Amino acid sequence: MPVGTQATVKAVTPGELAEVGARIVLANTYHLYLRPGAEVVERAGGLHEFMQWHGPILTDSGGFQVFSLSARRKITEDGVRFRSHLDGSEHLFTPESVTRVQERLGADIIMAFDECAPYPAEKEYVREAMERTHAWAERCLSAHTRQDQALFGIVQGGVWPDLRRQSARFLGSLDFPGYGIGGLSVGEEKGQMAEALEAAISELPENRPRYLMGVGAPEDVLDSIVAGVDMFDCVLPTRNARNGGLFTPAGRLNIRNGSFREDLLPVQSDCDCYTCRNFTRAYLHHLFRAEELLAYTLATVHNLRFLIALVERARGAVLRGELSDFRERFLEGYSPTDPEARAMNRRRRRAAVWD
Ligand SMILES: [Zn+2]
Image (cartoon, rainbow, N blue to C red; front, side):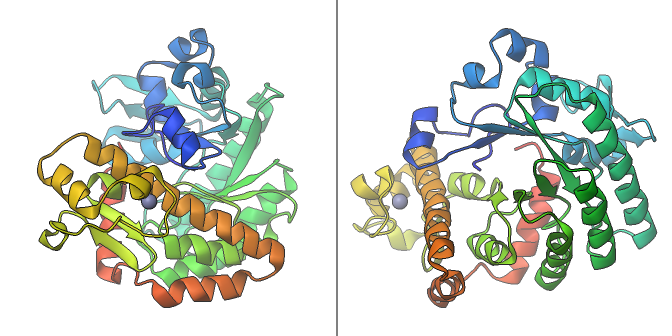
């Protein structure tokens, strides 16, 4: 799911999104609640009308954003009191109020209000946050009235497999139509994430979609599909694109690099996106160096297409029963960004939740 935090996927139109093969986009409750306000979106006819995206939309609950306002928020059993990052005004999010806001925004899939514990954190704190998340999930279920929206629960539990299993078992018993797995890819090691993910998935109902929140590096997406994940969202493809970082089957290239100044090849020769069908690396390099706005659009179109095409091919491989071969073949040619750069990206991503 491309991320459209402020009811827009940065630098691309809804028509361009449809053209790269996007089926569903994500918007953010915290941001839209503060600006322009749920009542404005509701009066405009809901998010689909407001942003002119007529495919499915998912709103996250805003939990991740309010909890990352560490100096500006206070957690109680009832909810979270916080100050707006825009004007310092004080607000209270409770499971009931967040559910109500999401009903007014009108997405097709809405998320339960959860507490995403920071990483690293003591196990006892992570357990408390998980228990609060469970109590809040039940409250979201009772507050939810719109039958045309699916409300997903969110599994928490940090990097501890026993907590992840416990969380998945509890939420599974509440019979949500789908499940988010939150609080991963926040700076932990790859192995820790894999273990926590496996533990959660082992206890989630098999016939409900599983949504791994905030994951979008191509190699992580493939590994997680192998582990049993169905849905992803991440700002990585769009944010990287705006910084000149372009995905290719060989790894990420930085188009600002001087070596592309005279490179007349497309970004990726076998990519079917608008950018690769029409433009050269030299042209994109030039647009970035000249700080032309079209650079952001062309780069975003390519990165979104790259990930969506990867998932389309993975889906085909699942249907043919060839997923692990597909994963191996992809990873053979692909060099992921080195672990240190990945960890730095994640820290930056955590600091910059305002994307
Ligand atoms: Zn392309």
